[in-house]
Amino acid sequence: MKFGLLTQVQVSKPWDDMSERITYWQNLEHAVAAENAGFSHFWITEQHFFAEIGHCPAPEMVLAALSQRTKVIRLGFAVILMPCHNPFMIAERVATLDVLSNGRCEFGAGRGTAPYVVEGLGFNSDPDHAREVGREALEAVVQMMEQEHFPGYKGKHFDLPARQVVPRVVQRPHPPLWYAASNLETFERAGAAGVGVLGVTRYTPEQVKPHVDAYRAAIRTANPVGRFINNQVGAFAVGCVHDDDAAGKKIGCAAARFYYGDNDAELNKVRFGSSEGVAAIKARMAAYSDDDMIDSGMAIGGNADSVCRQVERWAKAGLDQMIFMFQIGRTTHDQVLRSIELIGEKVMPRFAD
Image 1 (tube, rainbow, N blue to C red):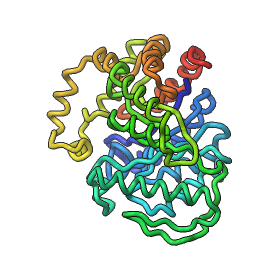
Image 2 (image 1 turned 30 degrees about the vertical axis):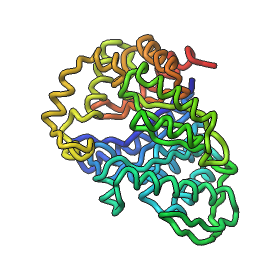
Image 3 (image 1 turned 45 degrees about the vertical axis):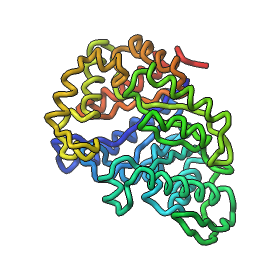
C-alpha cells in the first residue's frame, strides 16, 4: 500500500492578517515532511469561495512551489474542475507542473460537485451536463499532451482550433489520470474510463469494497479516456496520529467533525448542497461518538497501533493508496507534523510491499 497526504488549505476562524500566509507556508512544510517520511503522493484540491473550508483556488501554484522543495514525492491535482476551465489552459497548467517537477505530476479530473462554486465561476452545474463537458475537456487535453501539433477538437460542448500546445509534458503521453469519487457510484465509472479513482472514507471499508470490486471489473474491459490504464484506487481519511491513543482519537475525530460540517463556517449550507443549517449539522454530528466515527470510517485516529488496524481494514477493502488529511479545523501545525512522522516511522513499515 502507498500513502498520500491531502490538503484543502483550511483556514478556520478567528483570522488575523497572517492567518492565510501562515497556513500556506505550513502546508508546504507538511508536504516536505511527508516526502521525508516516505509518503508517495501529495494531493491538493481546487476550491473556490469556501472561506474557512478551502483556500486553494490555484493548486498548480502550490504544487509548483513544492516542485522546487521536493525531489521524489508525486504532486497531484485532486482535482482540477474540468468544466470550469478552457481545455488549453488545463493542458498548459498540467504540463508546466510536470516540467517543473521533472515528471512527478498526477492529473486528477472532476466535474465540481458544489453548484455554489460552479455557478459562481459562470458555468452550468447540472451534474449530467458537467459530466459531459468534463469528459470532452479531458479527451481534448489528452490529445494536446499526446500530439505535438494538436489537430483541434470538435464535440458537443467544445470547438477547439488546431494549435501547438506548449510546454510539452515530461511523462509521455501524459501524466497518470484520476477521477474524483465523492459518490461510490463513480468508482465503476472511473474503471470504465481506465483512470485511477480518488474516494473519501465517509463510508465503512465494508461498504466501499463492493465498489472497489466494481472498479476492478470495469477496468478490465475499459474504454480508456487516456492512452494507458491507471489501475489505482485511493481514498482520503480525515484524522490524526498521536503518541497517546486517546489523544489521537480525540483530535482526529474533532478534525473529522469540522470537515463534515460541525463548525461555524457560513457556507456549510451551500457546501453540502442542502438546506441543512449549522445547528442541524451539529446535532447530526453530536449523535456520533468518537468510536462510532472511527468504526464507520468517517475518521481515522489514535496511536500508531490503532491507526494500523484501521488502515488494515482499508487495505482489505482493496485500496492501493491510503491518503491522510490532517490539516483541518483546530489541529495544530505540530500535531500535523507529528502525525506525518508517526505514519512514516510506525505505520508505513507494516504495509511495505
